[in-house]
Length: 148
Image (cartoon, rainbow, N blue to C red; front, side):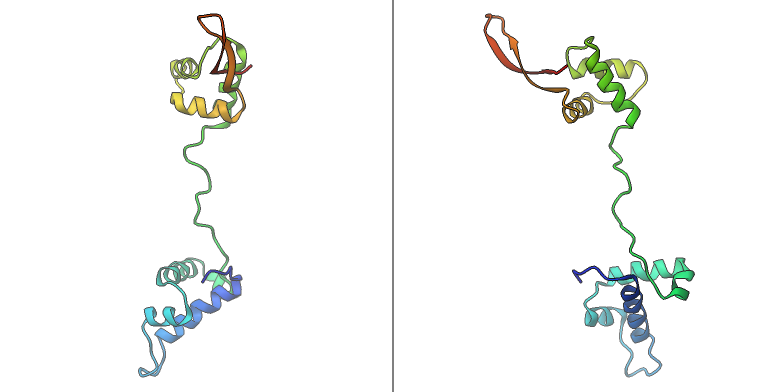
């Protein structure tokens, strides 16, 4: 099933499969797998939806099965807003020459963050990228630097 179903349609599918698997006439009874296959629904999806209905009896009374996203609600690897703000402030201060120095300073403060996480957050904020610096021979060289 590739189309998005309404809450009522999801509920009706679960009811249809449940009825087919528990038909009073044994000759007309189907396995859950066969009933799912006939309707074009994955068995795992039926099981997940059925479990949701079992956990929420008020949905059965209303005759609906609301869609619930299985996607994570929050990126577990994302740094907290306060830490990202602190990284930006440290980069703008002019005290630090590169992301690893900022990472080292944050770890000294007790904030557990990797140098790569600092670099990635600075790049996203537009504070780290290619800039022109003077090389040892006096000529301009493009190099990744903190952008202030």
